[in-house]
Image (cartoon, rainbow over the protein chains, first blue to last red):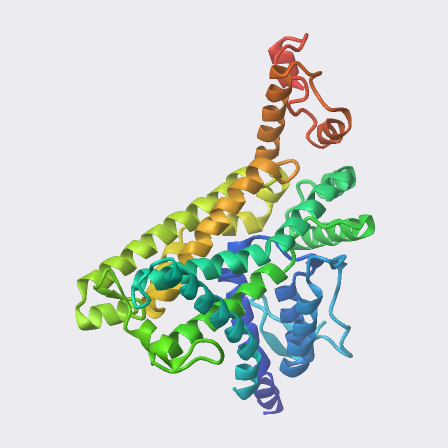
Length: 100
Length: 320
């Protein structure tokens, strides 16, 4: 019951995850590797939404995209560590339990 | 939605100003203000202005990718460390180390996400401007009601209205519109395909060709035409022209980059070195200019450093 509720609560972020996964599979490869960071902007946004939810995830992702310009140094740039990481399945969807 | 409109306003204003400016110039040069050709030329002008404004971004990227040549030994060391390890975690660790190495050296071979992203709102803005003009609505700035009416009534060669989509062509059964849309799609497929092929086969290093991204890119090469067909179906012919000219611009720019400033370590770079060496030989200069060739030779262990008359037999040179 509460598991089902939790899953429902994760629905918005999983919808965003689906969009991002589709983008990463279909559109992103058209351009090849362009991002100056690791993980790339779309991977960063994906993780941010998975772990921080839709609102904070989009905010973090947008700020990252603004940081990714030709004058940026680049390098490794991970998402802020969440209090607890939620588990994700292989497709990238967020599951209703914590990461093992 | 209102915030969105507010964000698009300046973009649309600039697009309109450039379009109207070129429309004025073409008309002043004797073009018919109501003809589709005049509007197509205005769209060509728009592409030229926007893409030229982005040249600094491209140049900046090329310069920094050349600079990243200097830390190539370090990158090669990392690649060696992870050679043959294809699992996800090793690849991730390798990418992390590579990126960190680039950052430490203060260079980066990647273009960043900006040049791509910047084009999306521009294209969206153009679609909105053309849609409004098509509905005979005045734009946000210099595109007046009169000009909008002029645009919505303009046709290419008297038979192909610029505001129609391929879908509208089928609806009204207008053969010229359908033929034009299909022709545009074909040309776009050809240019996109050729550009992509050039980048992939000539301007990528062997290491890049090994990445899983590369394989995905190959597959997508064959999906692009489907995308373009769908967009031809949905977007007005005017925007198709924008896209087409933009593609041609990219193609020409890419060919120039491949011949003048290729990615270090790629096939194109080797070809360029060979060309330079031949040129020097023709001019009777010593075979290589010291510094640059040396670092290049370090990267690709056997490049075209001394071309034809090595003392060793050919088999030995290629052997090791």
